[in-house]
Every structure is written in C-alpha cells, then in structure tokens.
Image (tube, one colour):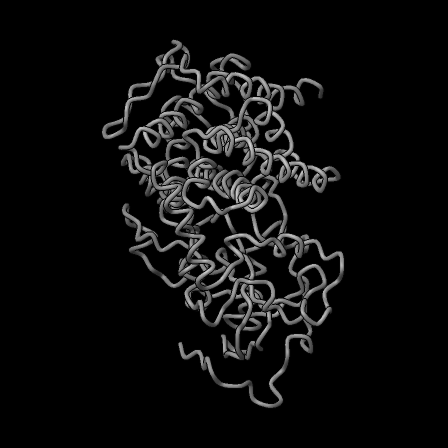
Amino acid sequence: MESHAFAAAPAGSPRIESLPVEPLLTSEFDADPGSVYERLRRTHGPVAPVGLMGVPVWLVLDYREVLEVLRGESQWRRDVRHWRARAEGRLPRDWPLLAGYEVRQTMFLDDDEHRAARLTYHSAMRPFQDGHTPVGWETRAAVARYADELIAMLAAESGTTGFADLAAQYTRPLLLMVTTKLFGCPVELGDEMVMDLWRMLDGGPDAGAATARASAAMTRLVAHRRAVPGDDLTSYMLLSDPSLSDEQLGRELFMNAVYLNDITGNMVCNTLLEVLRGNASVRRSLSAGLIGETVNRAALVSPPVANMCFRFAARDVRLGNYWVRAGDVVSPSVAAAHHDLLAIGTSHIVDSTISTRAHLAWGAGPHQCPSAARELASMIVSTAVGRVFDHFTKAELTLPPDQLPWRAGPVVRGLRLLPVRYELGEQSSVLRGRIPAPRSGEEPVPSPGHADDGRVGGLLAALRRLMFGTRRSQ
C-alpha cells in the first residue's frame, strides 16, 4: 500500500475533528465487539474515526493497514509528545487514558532511546527465557510447580469433582506467583503487590490508589534488589544498565507487571476458553500435543490485546480511505485485523494443524514484544494451559460462551471469570502429593518442597485468602 509519507494532505480533506464519530465503548461493543468492527469497516473501510471516551481517534481495522502502522517506525511514533491534541491542550484534563501514556517507559519511547532500552531488556531477560541456564531452568520448573500447587489447592478445597473459576482461582494467581518469583519480591513485598495488582487489574474505586501503591512498591523493590542482588529480573536489569534509577526501573517493572499479569493471563484464559467452547482448529492442535500451536490458534480468534497502544502520525499520510494528519492518534485493532484475516478465506491458517503464526498478539515491527520476553510469555502460557489438561479428565463450561462476562475497555478484552465443572483424574499427581513427570522434551520439575527462598509459602497463603475468602463470605 502506498503511504505517501512525505505528501501533504490535499486542501479540503476532512480532519478527524470535523468528522462525526460514534463512540466505541458502548454496550454493543461490550457484548459483541466483532459486530462493531464489521459495521465500522462497511461504513469507512480499513480505517474508521471513532470517539474514545470523548476523544476522536483513528481505529485501524484491516490486517494490512494494521501491519503498516505497527511496522512503520518513522511514520508512526509512540512518544506521546507527538500527539497534537495534547500539545495544543485540547484533551480533557482528567481523560482516564492519558496518565499511562505520560509515563516515560520503554514502550512509549522512539528511535535510539527505544532501541537502547530494548537491548537492556533483552540482555536482562534472555537467561530466564533460556531453559539451559540455571535461572531459566528454575523459572520453567517454577511455573509448572505453581500450576500444580494451585490445582492441588482446588482439589483440597472442592474435591476431585467440583466447580472452579479458572480465571480467578488458577490463571490470575498463577501469573501473580510467577511475577513475584521473576521480579525477586521478598515475602512481605510479595503479599502487598499481590493485593494491589489484583485491585488494579479489576478496576473499581480502589484502582487509582492501588496503582500508586503498586508503583511505589516496585520502586522499593528496586532499592531492595540494588542492595541485595539475586537471580531475578530486577537484579539482572540493574546489572545490564547500572545507570537506571530506582524510579526509572520501578516504572519499567510496574508496566511489565501489568502486561505480564493482564496480557499473558488473558492469553491463558482465552486459550482455555477456545478449547472448552469446542473450537475445532484449537482442539486439533491440542489433541496433536502441539500446545504452542494451540495457543497461536486461540490468539488468532481471541487475542489478549484487542486494540494496541496508540501511535501518533509524524507526517500527513494516506491510510485507508482517509488522510491522517501529522499529530493525529491511531489505534491499531488487533482483534479487527484478525477478523479480517480469517474472513479472507485463508484456509491454510484456519484449517491446518500447524499455524502460520500470523497473529499479532505480540505486536509487530520495532515495538513488538522483545523476543526473549515473547518466548518467556509463550512458555508460561503453554505450561499453564498444558497443566490443566494434564490433570483434568473432564472440564466443561457452566455458562454458555455467549453469556461469559468480559471486561470492557479500549485496549484489553479479558474474561472476568471462566467457570467450569471439572473432574480430576484418579491418577493425577496432585492427588498423590507429587509433581508430574515432565513431557517429552521438558526439563524435570523439582519437588513441591522446594522453598524458593521462602517466598512461595507466604505468597500461597495470601493467594488462598484471595481465591477462597470471597466465595465463602458470599
């Protein structure tokens, strides 16, 4: 597609501020975002002007145009200072999405500053992604161990046959445990972080204060690990770039905690949902033992990030049927792009057992998720999904798929709950008090008695209160 990167918009071409825009976040969008994307595409083509909480935004809908925006670093900027409406003071002072974009953090940097920050991440995270290093081996083993411990807790609470919410009682606590382990949180900080990240991810009246506390907790964690280094991401980040201040690294960890818990957790739940609802393509991959491809296929149908972070046009550019002006904001819609891709009739993507990895769940282009982080997240998701089907001989939804409650929002589409009726196999290792033998090609997993420097015991106690306390009180 010709981008006209250095052309000026013709006189008389409409500005987004002059166009009538329909609000994106409506009850229809909450219930069925796919129908909203399709209506916008029929009306406007690959790119549509929408209202986002009162602010006009270009929503990019088609796969080709989304890729163009994600890959075009020189044209599509991430730094919020390129946003013309912000620079001219035309944004509402209390616009709820602005605060996140104001953070000077890797995902909102450009050019050399961005590349340097990504190198720091890659250097620090690579040992955790590599299963052949001691820290990588232990990370993989810990994810499997935590998954087994949580399923054992379900069995202890509800029996070998019962009901569970695989979002609140499995996926979310698992990701919080992994975050605590990966970041090197001591027990006292781990319990505090668990509680506040939980409130923050759920939203509600305490979310703002919880966000501030969690960010402050990350800064304190950095100070602690600077004084007492360990085999954790925080310490490796400090080693990779000693010039990082506690506040700078605290901001990086805070944003990564959000993405690790929310985005990776959504990918776990969405994959489980596609299996449980009977998605034939996803089930074929699972039956073939291809957990990674199972995750890829689920991500095509239900990506964990519906609409990616804003980009800002560096120059006037033709995109779809419109001219986007320098300083305009665009939101690449991964969910709409995937729907477009699947609707094209790409049967080799939809029907084959081996996927082409065409999904954009990890992004694309210079700002896509760094490879080491992507591999680490893929390992976490594959392990979390695989462990469920290792232990459960039966799992079925207790609500029709179209009645499951989803979190509404401009960026993430994630399940609020994933209720199932389950049966544990009589030979399940969690009933016999030991960890399963590894799959072919997996590293062996340590026994449940492994102490993790004392962190996991205290964290599991906090998670038990979170998992079961609310239900008992009701």
